[in-house]
Amino acid sequence: MTNQSKITADEARFPLAMLSLSAMNPRQNVPTSEVEELAESIWTAGLIQNLAGFIRENDKCEIVAGGRRLRALQLLAERHPNLAQERPELANPPVRIAPDETTAQAWAVAENAARRDLHPADEIRAYGKMERSGSTPAVIARAFAVTEKSVYRRLALAGLPEAVIDALAANEINLSAAACFTISADEARTLEVLEQCKGGNWSDYQIKKALKPDAVKDTDRRAKFVGIEAYQAAGGRIGGDLFSEETLLDDPDILATVFLERLEELTDMHKRDGWKWVEMTQDDYIGYWFVEEHGFERIYKEEGALSAEQSERFDELAELAEAEVLDEAGQAEFAALNAIMEGDFTEAQKAHAGLYLYVDRDGEVQTYEGLIRKADKAEAIAAGVLAKSQHSAGDAPKSQISQKLRDDLNRVSKGARQHAALSNPDLLIDLLAYQLSHNLYWSKPFGLSTEDVPNWPTTEAEGYALDERLTENPPRDMYGKDLAKSFRAFRQKGADHIRGELVRFLAAHLRGGDEKLAALIEKETQPNTRDNWTPTATNFFGRVGGPYMSDLWRDLLDLSDDHPTATTFDKLKKGEKAAKLDALFRGDHDLRTALGVTEEQAAKIAAWLPEGME
Image 1 (cartoon, rainbow, N blue to C red):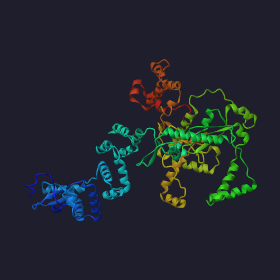
Image 2 (cartoon, one colour):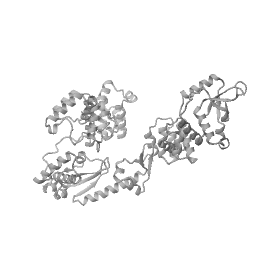
Image 3 (tube, rainbow, N blue to C red):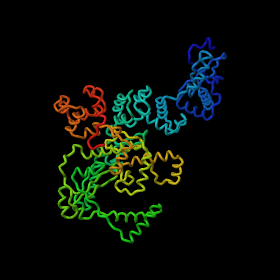
């Protein structure tokens, strides 16, 4: 047999005895451990990639590409004397034949210079095949020289419907998207979503949401509050995502029921504490806007007083607490003395007031206490529990903007001021020094106290963007850490890093000070709220009334009351009005062209803010 006359096919099988390593092969020296690992992989999964060689005059084939594979096959032949009978396909491996020496040399270089790993889809199928034949994850890991964790992840994908693996192999979806399908046990729904997302730009979140539109994460405040065990005891099913290591609750109705039942139990417990009334809300927060909207008056605990002996003991315990040497008994005693100082509601107060119970975003139970209803105010005043108001309501017209919306708008304004202040770090540092050296009481420029300086509306990032230094990297949890060691490492990062951290956290606590000081700060930072916030249907228009939107439409477009564009807008439903204004503010070209928006009107739209918002 010669390469000129006897070889007509570009591939043939050869007994191992007729194969040798070519001098052209770059892999002349290979670690024994690599050969052993590859031999185990080939014995378990088969020869996935063929050899390539060149025929010499002696009819023997020299391997120019696949030197490790050749060594692994030769090792298997040594270990299995009956290899030809046990695994004939390995005893006579297929070899792609180079037509000439020049091509052989090119193959030798190319395979090692441009080697590619298995496509993930092929790897998934190979792992799955090995598992079905009885191989454990540990065996598969050794065969492919990967970690067992990697094998488990691939095996999770191996259980997907074949159509998903086919789509991955065809590059119609990526590996991250394929992993999303592991959360679904509904094959019909899986295939439906697969067809929708093929070749598209669906995010992992969109795929998971489409597969399980009602599923709730275990980080949901309700799940934290009731606990996974209580949810499961009520018949709730648990799903999971191996790849993002999150737990999903597949029965939101059951979670809602268990949440409500548990909240009702706590409400009943508080009713026995002497309050006139106790109610619960499923909201995750209650603020002063809630009190105003419901017309409540609020009373507070009557502060307690420590005796001379207790005061002396309190000071001793405070020093020990500051030095972090207070034992468990001391902590309990310190907490008890603090409770005396904080005081409590009297029985007389409770007889006229009530409280609301709610679960916050962290799944913790909170109470808003000391609320007196409108109908109970007169009796509370007569009993001396509530002071008679010295203020009259006045004749000012009621704003069409709700207090809750006003809260959000104020947060946006604060965020814009903080955003602008980041550009003037010298001012921030000077302000800090000023506040620390002067007792400014309630006119402090920074919220450096236990209270928060909120800058994030309840509508989240809808139409709102801040410098990431105000939204990313919160203070690190240093519980149980070596603070001295941590501080030394922090200082070693240099003055620029320290200054940057100081500026970032000072900006996040900026709230202004008194009127004149706030004006001075704004003069230097030049904040522009519209740089950070654009009104949208979600964050503003959908939260005000239809007449308000009609007036705004006329004002922005300079329309008379009877102008067709104005009267047509008046006839729209509230949601349609909000969508129109949303598009107008987002700069929809077709809409603005149709309306004939002038440069002056465009500038007015770009600068517009709700009344009272700066």
